[in-house]
Amino acid sequence: MRLLKFTSSWTPREWAELILTVFVGLFTLMNAVVGLFYYLTYKESIVESGRQTNRLICAANIQADAAKKMVDAASTQAEKMTQLSVQAIAQAKAASALANEAKRAADISRQALDAERARFVEDQRPYIWVKKTENPQLQAGRKATWSFEYTNYGRSPAIGVRLRAQTIFGTNSRFKIRNDLYDGLHDGPNDRGGSVMPPQDPAYSTGFSVEILSEEDVKQIPQHDDGIALLAYFEYFDVRGNLYHTRFCTFRFKSGAFGECPGVDRNRVDEVGR
Image (cartoon, rainbow, N blue to C red; front, side, top):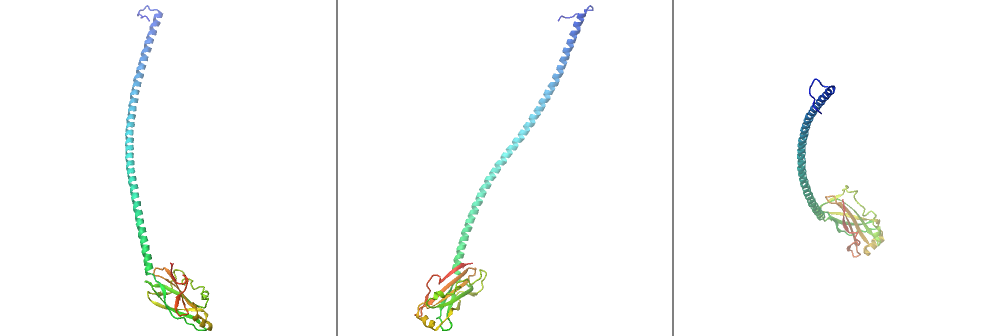
């Protein structure tokens, strides 16, 4: 574009070119001003955004540091808890071992105590047995009788002593035993009724026959071995409440001597229990 000279003799075209040039210059200047404004505004926005970003980064760093401290503290706490757990487990195992050892010692003590108690009971228990027998009394028309003495050979009193005795005679005398001869004499463990027999204290009783003697019985009995026999059954307690019973049986030979009845069930002493 050629430069215009200010002259009063400009043609319309020259005036148009002048006006266009001025307009273009103004427009360019305006664009420059607007661009400068946008630049300054954008720059300030960028700076402020940078500041906010920096503040956010700082806050994030602070939070990250705080989180790291919390993680470190949690890790330390977890380590302490692990150590405490290990210690607790070790203590529990030690306590369990002590408990097992204490139980084993208690079991041993209890077994020893039970054994000692059993030995004491066995050693101190009452023991009733027939000490001696008189000659059987035979009289026709009456029941046969056989008196005897019994005593407590044990070391402690026999409590609630009760007995049942029978005299039997004849060649088949074993079939004449009372059905209830060996039935219990106490009505359960709480029934302690009966006499109290201290050790070595004698007592006496008599066994009667069920049948009445005839003249022939009185004649034949002395001529046979085992022609007459005495059976007795005792039931009694010790001081601890243990129940015992004694079975006794003796017979007379034709010689006049006495013998023990055959059979393990005729002569024995048993502990029945409580």
